[in-house]
Length: 543
Image (cartoon, rainbow, N blue to C red):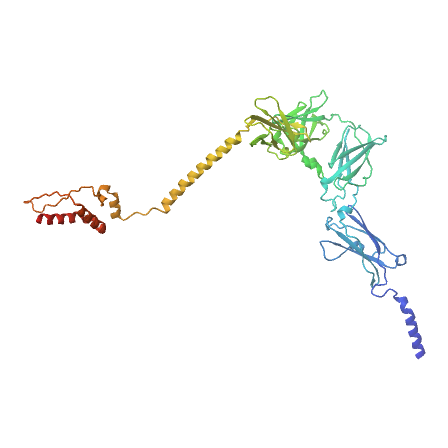
């Protein structure tokens, strides 16, 4: 029995390494190597390398993480796969933030360590796939409708205005190819031959990334039989005052009427059909001439398209070319306004664009011409800055200035000159004198105001009524001190009407001194002077 158990134990020990050679928490599984991601539009292809001995015996799983996430997220298309690559899309992920991936090998309950890729921004790594193309044929034209790469996806969803397209077209009977470049999602190729087969392919170019897409699949289409009604050609627009004049060419002896339509300029720069967005021009409906006139305020937009169609009875022509119009090309630039700030021997000129539209005042070149009032010699200055400083001028001299603006970069148009404005180098003296006069007047007004406020809030104190009455009497009544040389008369009140005696005596010097001393010592009783005099007189009479 012991022998049997020993044999069994020997068998188990010998078989243990063969059952789970990698069973040590996954440490014996080698992780994948060379993690790489290849992106075309919204399709991601995650690739890695693995040792040959593991191929076919293990599976792989992958996860991703963005800088906005703390946790790793599983990729459903890349879980427990036997190959070394998988495809998936991250339509809900932000393609403008750093993203990274990691992959590990798995076998049963054992896993390898994660092998991580470098962090990258998908938008800059992605390749551009071919654009979508649809064709419509006319007798002498082909309408090419384009959809931007990755239509409906996330990678280029914000880049609709960033693509330019190269259309390569050729006849099947010729090797000569014509390249047409456009930024619109609908392009009409004109001047083709009826009943002819044309082939074309389209390539997208991202203007800021300078990346080229792969070309679309070659498509061929036959133009139709020539229409009975020719298409209007050579559509042009002119401006006359506040109106536009639309003109076109049309050769026929039939009594033909025409109509014109317009389209907002930006609609051709976004994906999708715009055929139902065309609007009629009221004054260009059913006209019998090859021109029509309409107000410039018909379109409240800077850019638009125009097209014309001919009709005769129940027959109508194809629409003409879609003429692109930028209204800035047809509007006049008004003369600028100018201002002058003088100094002692120079002055500064400010030129201001007077157009209400900011876009029309952008990118202008400013020009001024100035001369002495007594001379015909003009001096000219031109620059992109609207401020000019003119130095080294003659004193006491009058100068004349006028200005205009140029839109050279785009339309090569110029405004008329502004009205002549004169400036004297003596002006600064007049201005300085005026400033001094104004300052003096301001100080005087301030002083008067302060005086008035003092009188209102801090009035002067008045003496008691008795003192005020005394001060208001004439000086002859209030004077108490008399000089030695003065002579006075003494008057008496006659109490007894039967006996009247009047005596005039002159005060002696001693009496005067006595009187003055008494008066100075009893100045508070000056109001009883008459009573004192009367009493003294009575005593004199009694003597």
